[in-house]
Length: 286
Image 1 (cartoon, one colour):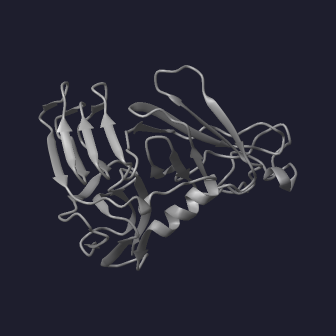
Image 2 (cartoon, rainbow, N blue to C red):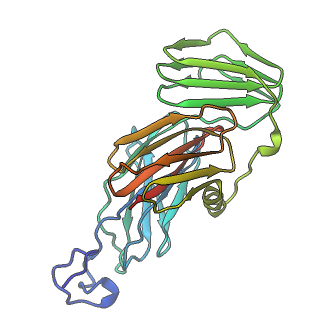
Image 3 (cartoon, rainbow, N blue to C red):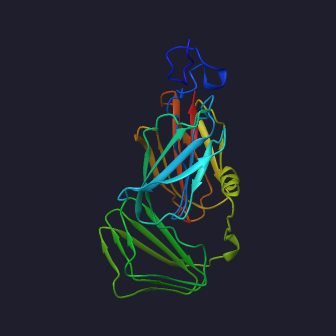
Protein backbone atom coordinates (compact mmCIF):
# COMPACT_ATOMS: atom_id res chain seq x y z
CA UNK A 1 0.00 0.00 0.00
CA UNK A 2 1.26 3.52 -0.71
CA UNK A 3 2.03 5.62 2.35
CA UNK A 4 0.15 8.84 3.17
CA UNK A 5 2.91 11.09 1.84
CA UNK A 6 3.14 9.87 -1.76
CA UNK A 7 0.85 9.75 -4.79
CA UNK A 8 2.03 6.49 -6.33
CA UNK A 9 -0.84 4.00 -6.82
CA UNK A 10 1.31 0.87 -6.52
CA UNK A 11 4.40 0.12 -4.45
CA UNK A 12 6.42 -1.39 -7.31
CA UNK A 13 9.56 0.76 -7.38
CA UNK A 14 12.60 1.29 -5.13
CA UNK A 15 12.15 2.22 -1.49
CA UNK A 16 14.25 5.37 -2.08
CA UNK A 17 11.34 6.68 -4.19
CA UNK A 18 8.60 5.56 -1.77
CA UNK A 19 8.02 2.40 -3.79
CA UNK A 20 7.24 4.21 -7.05
CA UNK A 21 8.99 3.81 -10.40
CA UNK A 22 12.01 6.09 -10.70
CA UNK A 23 10.39 8.18 -13.44
CA UNK A 24 7.54 9.19 -11.09
CA UNK A 25 7.89 11.77 -8.32
CA UNK A 26 6.03 10.07 -5.51
CA UNK A 27 5.70 12.98 -3.09
CA UNK A 28 2.59 14.98 -2.25
CA UNK A 29 2.52 18.70 -1.51
CA UNK A 30 4.27 20.13 1.56
CA UNK A 31 2.06 20.63 4.63
CA UNK A 32 1.90 23.30 7.39
CA UNK A 33 3.78 25.88 5.32
CA UNK A 34 3.60 29.25 7.07
CA UNK A 35 5.55 32.31 8.25
CA UNK A 36 7.48 32.35 11.52
CA UNK A 37 9.21 35.74 11.13
CA UNK A 38 8.33 38.97 9.31
CA UNK A 39 10.29 42.20 8.91
CA UNK A 40 10.63 44.81 6.16
CA UNK A 41 13.40 42.86 4.40
CA UNK A 42 13.08 39.22 5.53
CA UNK A 43 10.28 36.66 5.76
CA UNK A 44 10.94 33.32 7.45
CA UNK A 45 8.89 30.17 6.82
CA UNK A 46 8.78 26.70 8.29
CA UNK A 47 6.95 23.53 7.27
CA UNK A 48 6.50 19.85 8.11
CA UNK A 49 9.30 17.66 6.79
CA UNK A 50 8.01 15.34 4.06
CA UNK A 51 9.16 11.73 4.29
CA UNK A 52 11.34 10.64 1.37
CA UNK A 53 12.26 14.15 0.21
CA UNK A 54 15.51 14.80 -1.64
CA UNK A 55 15.48 18.48 -0.68
CA UNK A 56 13.05 21.29 -1.44
CA UNK A 57 12.46 24.02 -4.01
CA UNK A 58 11.47 27.30 -2.32
CA UNK A 59 10.21 30.10 -4.58
CA UNK A 60 8.93 33.64 -4.11
CA UNK A 61 8.06 36.71 -6.16
CA UNK A 62 6.19 40.02 -5.93
CA UNK A 63 2.56 39.45 -6.90
CA UNK A 64 3.01 41.88 -9.78
CA UNK A 65 6.01 39.95 -11.19
CA UNK A 66 5.90 37.06 -13.65
CA UNK A 67 9.18 35.33 -12.75
CA UNK A 68 10.07 33.58 -9.50
CA UNK A 69 13.21 33.65 -7.38
CA UNK A 70 14.11 30.01 -6.74
CA UNK A 71 16.22 28.44 -3.98
CA UNK A 72 17.23 24.77 -3.76
CA UNK A 73 17.31 23.55 -0.15
CA UNK A 74 19.07 20.46 1.25
CA UNK A 75 17.40 17.22 2.31
CA UNK A 76 15.17 17.49 5.42
CA UNK A 77 15.31 21.30 5.62
CA UNK A 78 12.30 22.62 7.55
CA UNK A 79 12.76 26.41 7.43
CA UNK A 80 14.06 29.16 5.19
CA UNK A 81 14.36 32.96 5.32
CA UNK A 82 13.84 34.96 2.13
CA UNK A 83 15.87 38.18 2.32
CA UNK A 84 16.38 41.45 0.43
CA UNK A 85 12.61 41.92 0.07
CA UNK A 86 11.12 45.29 -0.82
CA UNK A 87 8.92 46.88 1.88
CA UNK A 88 5.34 47.92 1.06
CA UNK A 89 5.18 45.08 -1.48
CA UNK A 90 2.96 41.98 -1.68
CA UNK A 91 4.82 38.69 -2.20
CA UNK A 92 3.77 35.13 -2.92
CA UNK A 93 5.75 32.20 -1.49
CA UNK A 94 5.51 28.51 -2.37
CA UNK A 95 7.41 25.27 -1.86
CA UNK A 96 7.69 21.78 -3.37
CA UNK A 97 9.65 18.70 -2.33
CA UNK A 98 12.34 17.27 -4.63
CA UNK A 99 12.44 13.60 -5.59
CA UNK A 100 15.44 11.33 -6.07
CA UNK A 101 14.92 11.35 -9.85
CA UNK A 102 15.56 15.11 -9.99
CA UNK A 103 11.94 16.12 -10.51
CA UNK A 104 9.74 17.69 -7.86
CA UNK A 105 6.37 17.06 -6.30
CA UNK A 106 3.39 19.42 -6.62
CA UNK A 107 3.57 22.99 -5.36
CA UNK A 108 1.72 23.65 -2.15
CA UNK A 109 -1.12 26.19 -2.13
CA UNK A 110 1.33 29.03 -1.51
CA UNK A 111 1.23 31.94 0.91
CA UNK A 112 0.74 35.66 0.20
CA UNK A 113 2.26 38.26 2.52
CA UNK A 114 2.38 42.05 2.39
CA UNK A 115 5.86 43.15 3.50
CA UNK A 116 5.43 46.11 5.83
CA UNK A 117 7.99 48.77 6.63
CA UNK A 118 9.96 48.33 9.85
CA UNK A 119 12.37 50.92 11.15
CA UNK A 120 15.90 50.78 12.61
CA UNK A 121 16.14 50.62 16.37
CA UNK A 122 17.44 53.78 18.05
CA UNK A 123 19.49 55.57 15.38
CA UNK A 124 20.94 58.98 16.33
CA UNK A 125 18.27 60.77 14.23
CA UNK A 126 15.69 59.49 11.78
CA UNK A 127 13.69 61.03 8.92
CA UNK A 128 10.53 59.49 7.47
CA UNK A 129 10.20 60.89 3.91
CA UNK A 130 6.97 62.21 2.42
CA UNK A 131 6.92 59.25 0.03
CA UNK A 132 6.62 56.77 2.92
CA UNK A 133 3.05 55.51 3.35
CA UNK A 134 1.67 53.52 6.29
CA UNK A 135 -1.28 51.28 5.31
CA UNK A 136 -3.96 50.48 7.88
CA UNK A 137 -4.25 47.48 10.15
CA UNK A 138 -0.77 47.68 11.63
CA UNK A 139 1.25 49.49 14.30
CA UNK A 140 4.51 51.14 13.19
CA UNK A 141 7.16 51.91 15.82
CA UNK A 142 9.77 54.60 15.12
CA UNK A 143 12.38 55.64 17.66
CA UNK A 144 15.55 57.73 17.75
CA UNK A 145 18.06 58.89 20.32
CA UNK A 146 17.62 62.58 19.44
CA UNK A 147 15.16 63.68 16.73
CA UNK A 148 12.52 62.19 14.44
CA UNK A 149 11.45 64.16 11.36
CA UNK A 150 8.17 62.74 10.08
CA UNK A 151 6.91 63.73 6.61
CA UNK A 152 5.00 60.52 5.77
CA UNK A 153 1.31 59.65 5.70
CA UNK A 154 -0.88 57.11 7.49
CA UNK A 155 -4.26 55.64 6.65
CA UNK A 156 -7.37 54.21 8.31
CA UNK A 157 -6.59 51.97 11.31
CA UNK A 158 -2.84 52.56 11.00
CA UNK A 159 -1.05 53.50 14.21
CA UNK A 160 2.32 55.26 14.12
CA UNK A 161 4.18 55.58 17.43
CA UNK A 162 7.23 57.87 17.55
CA UNK A 163 9.63 57.96 20.51
CA UNK A 164 12.57 60.37 20.53
CA UNK A 165 14.93 61.69 23.20
CA UNK A 166 14.71 65.38 22.22
CA UNK A 167 12.14 66.25 19.55
CA UNK A 168 9.56 64.95 17.06
CA UNK A 169 8.94 67.22 14.07
CA UNK A 170 5.96 66.85 11.73
CA UNK A 171 7.05 68.36 8.43
CA UNK A 172 5.36 69.38 5.19
CA UNK A 173 3.75 66.32 3.61
CA UNK A 174 2.56 64.77 6.86
CA UNK A 175 -1.06 63.71 6.64
CA UNK A 176 -3.40 61.19 8.20
CA UNK A 177 -6.63 59.74 6.86
CA UNK A 178 -8.27 57.88 9.72
CA UNK A 179 -4.99 56.79 11.30
CA UNK A 180 -3.56 57.53 14.75
CA UNK A 181 -0.24 59.30 15.36
CA UNK A 182 1.41 59.08 18.80
CA UNK A 183 4.54 61.04 19.67
CA UNK A 184 6.40 60.84 22.98
CA UNK A 185 9.68 62.22 24.29
CA UNK A 186 11.53 59.43 26.05
CA UNK A 187 15.01 57.95 26.15
CA UNK A 188 16.05 55.37 23.60
CA UNK A 189 18.98 53.03 24.17
CA UNK A 190 20.99 51.97 21.12
CA UNK A 191 22.36 48.98 23.05
CA UNK A 192 19.34 46.95 21.95
CA UNK A 193 20.29 47.16 18.27
CA UNK A 194 20.65 43.74 16.66
CA UNK A 195 22.95 42.74 13.85
CA UNK A 196 21.75 39.53 12.23
CA UNK A 197 23.93 37.59 9.84
CA UNK A 198 23.16 34.07 8.68
CA UNK A 199 19.71 32.55 8.29
CA UNK A 200 20.53 30.08 11.07
CA UNK A 201 21.37 32.93 13.41
CA UNK A 202 18.03 34.58 12.63
CA UNK A 203 16.26 31.31 13.35
CA UNK A 204 18.13 30.91 16.64
CA UNK A 205 17.16 34.43 17.69
CA UNK A 206 13.50 33.78 16.88
CA UNK A 207 13.52 30.68 19.07
CA UNK A 208 14.98 32.69 21.94
CA UNK A 209 12.93 35.91 21.65
CA UNK A 210 9.44 34.46 22.21
CA UNK A 211 8.82 31.61 24.65
CA UNK A 212 5.48 29.79 25.16
CA UNK A 213 4.71 27.61 28.17
CA UNK A 214 3.16 25.20 28.74
CA UNK A 215 2.75 24.13 25.13
CA UNK A 216 0.67 22.01 24.54
CA UNK A 217 -1.86 23.46 26.97
CA UNK A 218 -5.42 22.73 28.06
CA UNK A 219 -6.14 26.20 29.44
CA UNK A 220 -3.63 28.96 30.27
CA UNK A 221 -0.58 29.59 28.10
CA UNK A 222 2.08 32.10 29.12
CA UNK A 223 4.07 34.15 26.62
CA UNK A 224 7.36 35.84 27.47
CA UNK A 225 9.68 37.93 25.29
CA UNK A 226 13.22 39.27 25.52
CA UNK A 227 12.03 42.43 23.71
CA UNK A 228 9.12 44.84 24.17
CA UNK A 229 5.82 43.72 22.64
CA UNK A 230 3.45 45.99 20.69
CA UNK A 231 0.53 43.62 19.97
CA UNK A 232 -0.53 40.02 19.46
CA UNK A 233 -3.04 38.08 17.35
CA UNK A 234 -4.25 34.51 17.90
CA UNK A 235 -5.66 32.77 14.84
CA UNK A 236 -5.47 29.59 12.79
CA UNK A 237 -4.12 28.50 9.41
CA UNK A 238 -7.47 29.28 7.76
CA UNK A 239 -7.38 33.00 8.55
CA UNK A 240 -9.80 32.99 11.50
CA UNK A 241 -8.88 35.55 14.20
CA UNK A 242 -9.81 34.68 17.80
CA UNK A 243 -7.89 37.27 19.83
CA UNK A 244 -6.39 40.61 18.76
CA UNK A 245 -4.92 42.91 21.39
CA UNK A 246 -2.47 45.80 21.73
CA UNK A 247 -0.05 46.09 24.64
CA UNK A 248 -1.38 48.54 27.24
CA UNK A 249 2.07 49.72 28.34
CA UNK A 250 5.35 50.60 26.64
CA UNK A 251 7.50 47.91 28.24
CA UNK A 252 5.26 44.82 28.02
CA UNK A 253 7.35 41.65 27.76
CA UNK A 254 4.89 38.99 28.92
CA UNK A 255 1.20 38.14 28.81
CA UNK A 256 -1.10 35.12 29.17
CA UNK A 257 -3.99 33.70 27.15
CA UNK A 258 -6.83 31.56 28.47
CA UNK A 259 -7.73 28.91 25.89
CA UNK A 260 -10.06 26.91 28.14
CA UNK A 261 -13.13 27.59 26.00
CA UNK A 262 -11.42 27.02 22.64
CA UNK A 263 -11.64 23.75 20.67
CA UNK A 264 -8.67 21.41 20.64
CA UNK A 265 -6.26 21.84 17.75
CA UNK A 266 -3.44 24.04 16.49
CA UNK A 267 -3.44 27.84 16.73
CA UNK A 268 -1.01 30.47 15.42
CA UNK A 269 0.14 33.28 17.72
CA UNK A 270 1.59 36.28 15.83
CA UNK A 271 3.45 38.62 18.16
CA UNK A 272 4.48 42.07 16.89
CA UNK A 273 7.52 43.51 18.64
CA UNK A 274 8.04 47.22 19.25
CA UNK A 275 10.64 47.28 16.45
CA UNK A 276 7.96 46.12 13.99
CA UNK A 277 9.18 42.54 13.58
CA UNK A 278 6.51 39.83 13.68
CA UNK A 279 7.21 36.38 15.14
CA UNK A 280 4.73 33.53 14.71
CA UNK A 281 4.53 30.50 17.00
CA UNK A 282 2.30 27.43 16.97
CA UNK A 283 0.16 26.65 20.02
CA UNK A 284 -1.37 23.21 20.57
CA UNK A 285 -4.64 23.19 22.56
CA UNK A 286 -5.36 19.81 24.12
